[in-house]
Image (cartoon, rainbow, N blue to C red):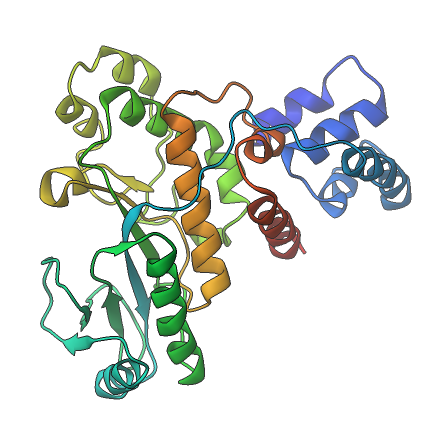
Length: 310
């Protein structure tokens, strides 16, 4: 990301054009002002206001039309702070079947709560969903979220949110494009996450930005060869889930029990996978992100970036 910023600053162009380029990259007005190169906050605010007005007056340009969410998915919510038996009883009382189990990777027809040795905090646990699908699955996730919020379940830096998508019918070109696109957009996605989930700092969700990734992807002739590029499951996109579950797992999101954060992340990932079926990212900016996401997701993450940068 820093190299991209430096390239923009060094462009032979006006300050206004550079500020707009940085805004389109996803930087906030405060971050641009802190560079102390393109002017003080007031000047940048003036450019921002005109840029924002121009954007709002134009119809959204989409590289493709996002499809309705009908994908099969699973979710793992890491948290702590409330005894498992209390959480399980409350989820069942809310009409969602949930059971206490020892640590395992088996797919169930019900929600399960298991222990997780990677988590810190009293009464740490992981809630694992069954296979969910489409809007009905999101509705069930919202119900579980409401229970966790009501119980005041806690999360900390050791907690993550993992999402699995059914990948049984995912083609070789889609796999290649998905990994290339995620790696290309990784700096942008990082700005949507707290510092503990960015770059290559987290042991459990390492970066996809490895040497010669595109060359390795182009050379792969089978899905197995693609998934072997990342032999550990502890990457932001876990390709090893394919051999175990016939899924692709996304591991970067920070821990949360909030439905709004979970649902927007799931819809973004759905859009990214759908986009990757026929497209590769050309320019990795927030404008590119906007071009394959619906307005609700764009607005949510635009505000999320602002909040995390404050």
